Length: 378
Image (cartoon, rainbow, N blue to C red; front, side, top):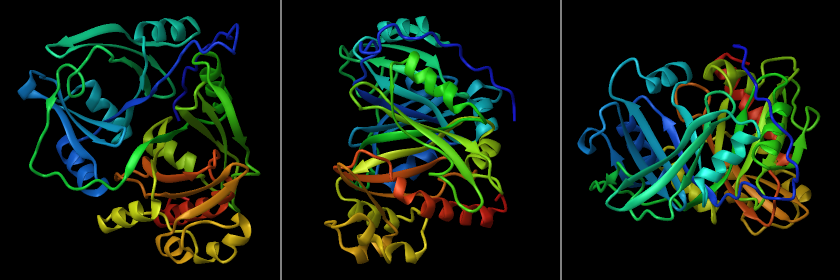
């Protein structure tokens, strides 16, 4: 694995001051080999709706993007139009994957200055972008691997998405599946790098650590990993960060790092208010999910107590349940959505719970190991 230059961060003078107020996730941009086909996939399989397009027809000459939306979730799918581009190099190295996690802010210039002054590497200096619908200001910083955060200030913009995009209204518009918003995004980093990036999010972006898991919490007979969950001040942005831990065989994080070519976003967790209906609809659209052993459900109610959902429905769909002091959650994980065993999605419904399904880790990772064994990478 390549050696990464890790950031030097400066400590925050007063951690009680939220110097980087974030309103939520603005968009997630994936660099993909074929944006048009990827947009069709996310429409057909996941129920995203067409929103915007930019490319040759809108004056772009180097790349094209399709934007799809569901609830508050916006995915931007971008492909190069020529060989030898930065986007193409990213795809060649990583496969289809997340390049940009864009964060909605009131002041993109202040966000840039605050984070860079604390040690962030600049990616995009504040820039005003405008058209007849108004203007936005965007800026950006580097994070782990080739992932970047872009700060988006859009209070003065009334267009469909961003300047340079036009409304995309194809006839093909399948129904959504009830996805609401991004609950969290998980990043995989290299050996002994988790604490470096935890420090980055704490000192550079003012995040707090919600919870941590070590190899005693997240391990099976064969593989293990470490994880810490970072959250911004208002809790709207949550970034769990994973690193590998020593095990008898190759962990899922090691497999990801090998196939992705370094650190990056491992999965995107999206929320729903009715996970049984959402997962039923997704399965009907041929989305494939990890399946835990049927024995997982034998003592489920003894572990989590009363739940509102029918056990037979959860068992047939493979939905997992966990409880914390605040309530319970239901979750399920797709198989990787591309040819490389890298990016996947989590569907989650929270019924009071603020945690991340610690009680499901063992069953989940055994299911992942089964898939690794089928791929010959365990």
